[in-house]
Picture 1 (cartoon, rainbow, N blue to C red):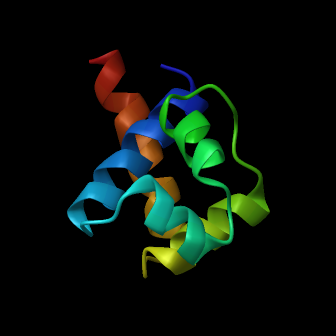
Picture 2 (tube, helix red, strand yellow):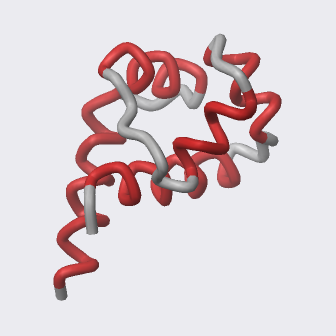
Length: 78
């Protein structure tokens, strides 16, 4: 699995755990809802700035999100 797809899966999981819609997360992260959708589908790699914005909006450390992405990528290989 590539990093973009893994990030998208992690982003969707964390967003849903927090009970946010894509629109709400987008507003909190100062990103467009459509961009949140593109990220969740794994259609685009997030920039470091985007990861930091999303992490802040989700009240999670950015390193935690990146760690979850790495785990997601490793689980797919098993």
